[in-house]
Length: 64
Image (cartoon, rainbow, N blue to C red; front, side, top):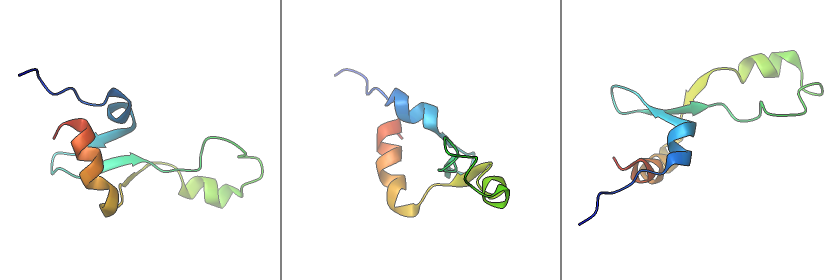
């Protein structure tokens, strides 16, 4: 049987931590940044843990 291939697009978007948590970039930082208050753009920087509802689907795409 052939090997399972992980979804390369998902692999570029998320990262699995050592404890198995799935972290991703916070949404809403791609465009229209001039309109958004700087407090909001500061809050949106960095990575956050992915919602619990999405974890099962993401891990399946990653082949874990």
